[in-house]
Image (cartoon, rainbow, N blue to C red; front, side):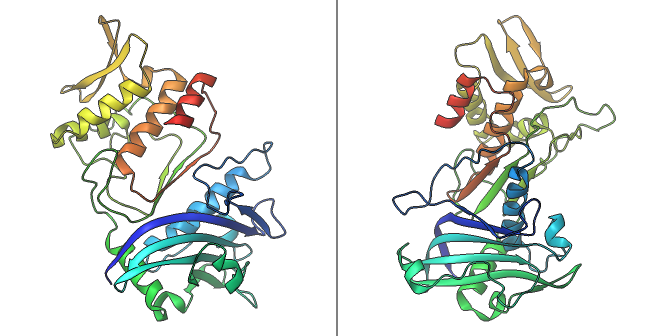
Length: 333
């Protein structure tokens, strides 16, 4: 089962009978030089399926982390009507040597051929890959998922899934870097607010939500509970007392507040929460930040905590609440 995942890079996503995509629709993430892109932007008018694409992408990635999933978490896939395929260029050290393969993660209704796209030898060799492997699940009937036989019978797929699934919930050891190479996806919804914490939510020093490794972290648009809050996350980093809070604070102050009279100072004990200081005189809570500041704080703090060398970040409505200057800052981060 020994395996090290060096690279995990999206090549293509194909959807059929999902949202507005009634016919097979392929998104190619490959640059004109033949290499998978490090940055990809989907631009379309409202209602053309951008959020559907992100949700489907995340649903396919989540299949790697669960041995027996009950559902996909995407309505059209769960109904037994839709189909999707995510193609990954994966480079690993396995069975004593380095390999590069095309990995297809497949989900949805069964068909004559489960694959929406078949990778011939000529196609995979264009990516310097040695072979093509498939994993995933299909619907015999709506509401019941069955795994592809390759999930168990193929040695590479079985070892890959075992390595990923045994890492689930492993706590991160650093901020802004990771010793682990397992792939993870962070999906940020279009609404990236920091709401006030519910007054009935008990504030204890407790492990933050989303703390351990997952194949997918979905950061939901509006959660007022203490465990999910960024205040709790910062208090937890401070309580660990291993330098992670200081790294997070320095990153936030550099990326959000550089050139302003505002900065993240510390966390207080009672009530436990982060302290934003303004003009060296007054302080306020995180939920009193501007919309753009909240947006960037969500992104930089969550990414710093959960990032691995093989991280995919999906940001819905990338530019929402962000001044052009802050958009450039996020582009360059």
